[in-house]
Length: 197
Image (cartoon, rainbow, N blue to C red; front, side, top):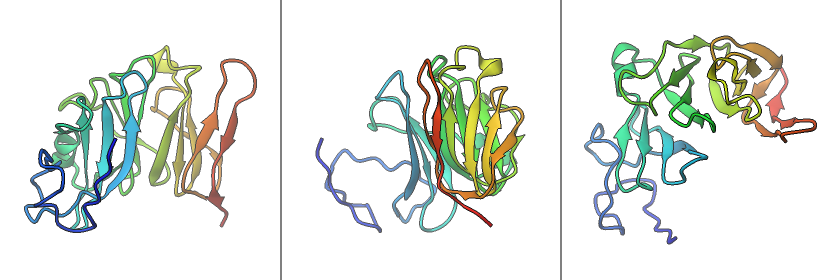
């Protein structure tokens, strides 16, 4: 892998000649300012990104060819809900077509059954905070209806026992991230940097 700096501004003449912009929304060509990357645990060539252009607006994209091409996956939701601003993703390791998307302003979790394809997103599942990170518990991911999810938010860490439908707070504070070690047997350990009020 070779890294090519393209700077914080315009990308009309990138060093990588086959470079393709993620979106034509911003015709001034400012960078997407990717705020989150999620790799499909079953296929390293499939990634999901949330991006926040410096000129405003947000969106989300999927690649299945290691970044050679990108497909927008939040546009259909944003047409009906302009406040929707994708912030993070998680992939169910047993059902990789099922992805979970967190949002900031509208404080929700959306679930797609088809890798974010238009029309595959379920309704918004409310959570009491802007979502910054989502974790799927791999010990429960075989059954979608009982998959346990965790989310770090501006109002604490929340847990869902039912694939993201309902959420309950398990930790207070302004949580910027969440990581976990969940072995198949034994005790799970969670780490969340949370600023207490």
